[in-house]
Image (cartoon, rainbow, N blue to C red; front, side, top):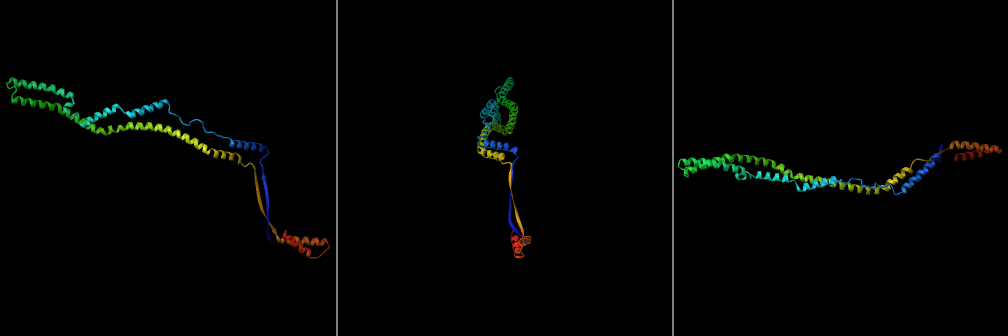
Length: 269
């Protein structure tokens, strides 16, 4: 039979080699100096690139063009609007076709009048009727094709109107692109300022991590081992009894009390 007899505590210290100690001491002192220093510092200059003069000039020119628009586009839209409204359908809208008709009408009138003059009927009702018919036929021959052509132009203008109207947004889109580029530079400047601010906020923590990494290595260690102790009562009684009897024999006594006392003492040990 055995019984617990407490624990045995063993402490073991392991130190770095002697040749390494000066370097470790120097390294930790240097880590302390770095930790207490003001650095590391953020890059002192701006971390984004300003627009070059050429880019600024190009952006300004594009902005002005987008705001004022193209005179060619405005003129094209005005002409397209006239065609879509049918302003060229009347004979008077085309001076060239009007001149052609007047010239041809003069020839027709001269011919008709000459014939009735030879017949002695110039100015008669028949004369006026024939002249009016001839001029009417001439107007149909001259103006009808022009009217039909302008109707086709009008139809084409109506078909092209949506696309032409869409071109108004081209200038708006260009202006938006210019604004986006300028905003991009402002965003870069803002990011630069935010990064600098964030760097200063995190600098103490970064320095602490670096300091701990430099000084927290496994350069030596101390280990403690706790070992429980066990007592064998039977073996203690036997060994104690034998020891007690031997002591009694040495004293010339045969009293068994020596053996009993030695056994009890051995059990407690």
